[in-house]
Every structure is written in structure tokens, then in C-alpha cells.
Image (cartoon, rainbow, N blue to C red):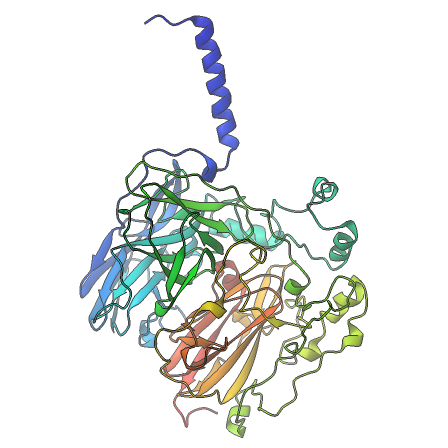
Length: 612
């Protein structure tokens, strides 16, 4: 074969330029080939063996260190059936302690898998046997609760089939595990966050952005600077170091879920990330949400939804065309995305939408309600929800001794509007007003107190307020079945989500896990309303072990029941729960490095008569 030398050199130069250019294109935007269509490794039965060990994993062609279970990342899908008993023998082949927490499963607290709270952990080269009845169905997951192992791949999905007929009709299903992965060790990530919390933020405002009109006006930027706050600080760790994975595969790997046109396809979507909140959509397809955190909800059709770390959503899609679709899991700060393909045949791919414009934090995200930067309220702003009102109908001396008890007729602390002032200086001062949060410890770990937190459970999440399609909110969720306990709460408990973003310190009520002395006590069987008040500019997915709770969204006896709730910045979220599981249970932010930095407490449910 004769090849013209000049043409060859020219072709090679173009190819070299293209290759060089491709290296600068984000992985999610690069062309893919082949696609991965293999199912997740699965284990099932009444006796299951799991082995935790160091391994390597390959993401978009790059090899990384990892911790896997039975040699895989994610860990094998555990498939169970409601009504069975299961015995899980977990062997730890690491040189350090490990554990497995069964996220969302209702079980005896000794089997919950939190070292130092419910069991001592699994020592190196030893085996621990978890054994419990399976009393529920739905989509859940499992992960390490030891150190920072979860970031390295120590997580996996759980699917529990109902013992009777499944009310959700579908022809095919796929389990979709979303996660984040870094070439950096989790210890290195945490060290960098402690030294400089903005280390990974490559989306800060620039002079070019200001001149182009894409960033905040100069005066607002100066005001934010006076408050030592950055409106681009949406995610602590993001696409500058993370590759976002779908079932352990990067964007170029192109994990592919197959379908036959016309089928009802059930996608069991699990956010197993360490630090990443995702906005999920499939351009060209409607998503019908049928389950939240493993429990069935009345079907609601949306175009997109935000999924906090540790949440799960089951959705039904019905692709009718013989073509591929892109499943997009966009990081909430828009610094990158996980992508996968839904297609009738392997090897297909669809167009990947570009990242949307990054969101900027607002005064509402600072807990200033509807105020503008001058300190004034926006016209027509409703501040009726500024104070944390109570709902308790009884506050007996016994309950009062337990702390944070708010009787029904107690007046909530009033917000001093005169202290709001005008300009960033006085607003900064008002955001350290502990009179609106008397239970919060005055501590360097508490940078701000939200003066006017508002209920944000009816909002879609940061950056999704103005999209031109339907985005799910918690208000859209309605339980399919009537709640098992519909009593009114006996008392109310306010818990502040506190932090110092400059020092990367996180806590509840200004008390970090290492400093607490007593657990948060509850009496067996009591109904309590928990008001989570977010005093920071970060979203926090808050998880309560061992229980489900009902979101307070006006749905009455059919309030959606969840085990994790995403509390928006500067906002509040309320839920009612029945303390029906005796024992000590972890209660924490599910952002791994926030929990590691101290945003965790222990909830203790005690038999009646034993509480002091």
C-alpha cells in the first residue's frame, strides 16, 4: 500500500492535535466505545459471605487503589426477600478495623454496624456475623462506617423483594449506584480541606466573569467578602478531583443499561457518594418516581430530581424509540457529571448535554430568608416561618429534663429585625446572634446562626429553581400506604446544623461527636417532631439510623417516610418520628468528611421508666 509521505505527516499532525485536545475535554464529554452492559455481581440466600479487602479498580482507563468487597467496587448487590432471615458473615482482610452498616434496614441495634455505638467493629483478619430478620422491602444499600473507607469503594446496593405482589409494575430493572472517586487518598482530601476548605473549588468568581456579567455585581462580591463567605462554595469536594461513577464506571467507560422499546424499565437509583449531591435526568424521557428511600410513594412524573448522599429513588421510564438515551448525574455545583447510557443495544451512545451554569449562593442560602443584600426584605416576603415554632401538645417535667423540649404554648424566640441593619457588616453580626438558638454552644466551630431560616422542602435544590422543566421536591412525595403511626407529636426538638466553613469544622448544636458526653435521649414509643435548622451555607443530608420518619410537608396520614433528608442551605426541614427501636443509634450528616469532622451524635431510645 503506497502512502504519500506528506499526507501521512499531515494526518499524523491532525491526529496528534486531536489527541492532545481530547485530553483537555472532560471525561463525560469524550467519545465512548463499546460500553459496559454486564450486570452487577449478586449474592443472595440466607447465608452470605462477604470479604473486605484492598484491591485496585480501573476508572476510564486509570488504575486506582480501592477497598472492595468480594473483589468488586461497588460491592456485590445483596438480593433478599421480605420475611426471610439472613446471616451475613463479614471477614475483614484489611490491616485496620472495618465495619458494614446496612443503610435503611430496620434491625436490632447490635446489628446496625457502627463502631463505638452499636458494636466494637470488625478487627483485622477476623469475621463478624450479622444476623437479623428482613422485615421490609425496597431499595437500600450498605457501606463502611469506619474511618474514610467508604470513599475508597466500600459500598454496595441492597434490593429486597416484597413477600407479596409488588405494587410497582415493570418489565425490566437496573440498579444504578452513583458515587464519586478520586486518585487522592481520602486522608489527603481531608487534610487539604482542613488547611483550605476551598482547595477543590475551581469555580470561584473571576474578573472575566464579572466583566461578562456572569458573576455577582462588584458591590455584592465586596459584601460577601466582608462576611468571609464565597457564593460559589456549593460543594466541598468536586469535579476538580472527583470522577463521578455509575456502578463503578467512569463517563468514558459508558456503563449501559439495555431495554426493549415500549418496556417499563425500573431504575433503582442509589447515591452512594462520599460528598456529591447529584441532579439526575434522562433528556428525552419522563421519570416517574415510585419509591423514595425504599418505601413506595404515589407515582409522580418529573423531568429531574436532586438526590442527596445516602438517598435512594426508584423511577420508571418507558422509552418507546429505538435509540439511546443519556442518564445524567450532574454534580449540584455543576463541576462535573456521571453519565451512563440507556439503549436497546450495546455499543450505542446518545448526545451528552453540556454542564449547566454553576449556581451561586444567595441570601436565602445564608439563612436570611427573602432579604436582599441591603438587609431589607423582598416585597411580599412571608416571614411567618422565621421563628422555629413548636408543635408539642405536652411538655411534662420528665420530657423537660431530656432537653430541647418546647411546649406547645411556648413563644418562639423573636428575631430582632433592628439588628439586621443594612450592609454586610451588620448582617454578619446578626448571623452570630445566639439568642435565636439558645441551645447552640458558643464555640469557634459555629461560624453563623441563620437569623431567618425558612422551610425549603418545597424547593427543588440549589441551581434548579429556574430550569424550564418539572423538578421533584419533597412536597411532591405522598406515601402509597397510610403511615403506621399517625399520632400528633408529643414534643418538639430543634437541632441546629452548625459549622465553620473557614476551618472545616462541623457539628450539631455546636457540639461535635468527639466532645459530646450524653446521647440525645428519647422514650420508647414517643412521637417527636424534629426541626433541623441549617445554620450553614452547605446542603446536609441528615440520616437517622434504625428508624423511618415522616416529612412534615402537609400530607397528613400519607406523609412520605424516609431515613435521610436533604436540608437545604440556610433552611429548615421538619420530620415526625416514633422512637420505636430500643438502643443507641447514629444520627449524622452523610457527607463523609462532615461526619468525620464532627457532625454526628448518638440517639438513645430508652424503655419508659429508665429515662432520667
